[in-house]
Amino acid sequence: MRKWLVVLLFLAVAGYGLWNATAAEQWSETEREKPSSAGEAGAEIGRVAPNLELPALGGDTIQLSDFRGKAVVLNFWTSWCPPCKKEMPELEKFYKQHGHEVAVLTVHLTTQDTLDNAERFAKSRKLALPISLDVRGEALRQYRIQTIPTTYIIDPNGVIRRKIVGPVTAKRLEQETALFR
Image (tube, rainbow, N blue to C red; front, top):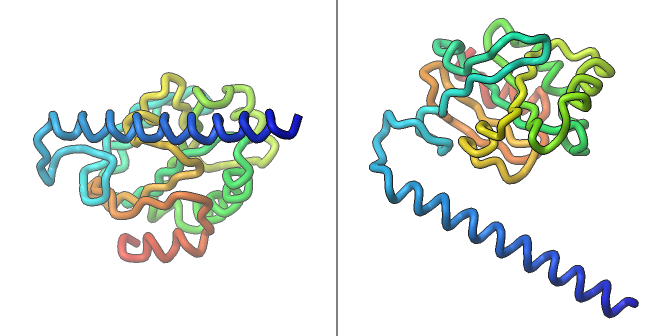
C-alpha cells in the first residue's frame, strides 16, 4: 500500500512539473510572436497592465482602466485558499485606510471557485472593498496567475511596478504604494 502511495505521489509531482513546463513554454511562444514595446500591455513588471472589465459582486461592472490616474492594488484570490483567507483582513484594512488614495481591486477567480463561495466569503467578513468576478477565466489567463494569492502594484499611469506572490499585509501595501500616495 505504501509503495502505491509513493508512486502516486511521484506521478502527481511529475504531472504538475510537466504541466508547469508546458504552460511556461506556451507563454514564451506567445511572447515571441508579439513584438515587445514599452507601451504594450502585458502582465510583466514595467509593462502597461492588461485592462480588465469584469462583473462585480453587487451587479456593477468594474474596469481596471477606470482607475487611471490613481495607483492600484490588484489582488487575485479564491475563497478556499488559506493564504487568501489570511490576507483578506489586511487588504480590507489597507482599503479602509488608503482607499481614497489608492484603488484596491480584488479579483475572485470564479473559474477556480464558485460565485456562491465568493458571496458567502464577502458577506461573512463584511468586506467593503471592491470584488470583481473572473467568471470566464480571462483575468487568470491575461495575468498568468499560477499561485494565489497574487497581488500587482500598478502605478497611476497603469504600469505594473511590483508583483507579489503570496499573502500581503497592510503594512507591506503601505510600503509598496508610498511613492504613489
